[in-house]
Image: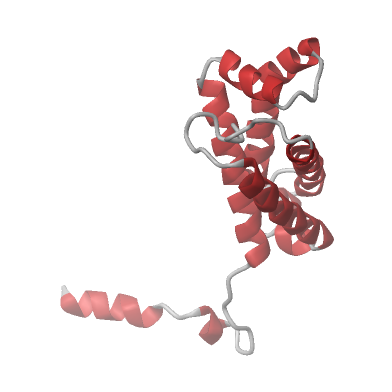
Length: 173
């Protein structure tokens, strides 16, 4: 039994042995894409699982949209957020979904930023439903860094689309 394990282990080689001159490294573009996707899935999923009125209250607190638009946003946006995150996780339609996520994060920054400028009495962002409570100032900084990361991913779509369904479908045409 021990001899079998050692012979199996001796057959395994690291990527650097199989591909001389190529070092094995983490693809930070893929990791970033997956983390942003997971964040959006978590955030959207939390809002989907809660009554929409909870998110409607949050949307109304930012005093950015008229009541009718706030209602539509509270019902639809969690699904949009979740689907964008899901497509990022899968790596499906990566360039288009990255553009959509850039639009979403631009909206987040604009809405939170205007609330801070207007000094609205918002103590927590409501971004993650009731799961996580963050002050708007923290969210503005976090969303700004994520926005910059998305821009970097868009500028490097080839690396970002590695380990993705896009790559799989391209290879298996």
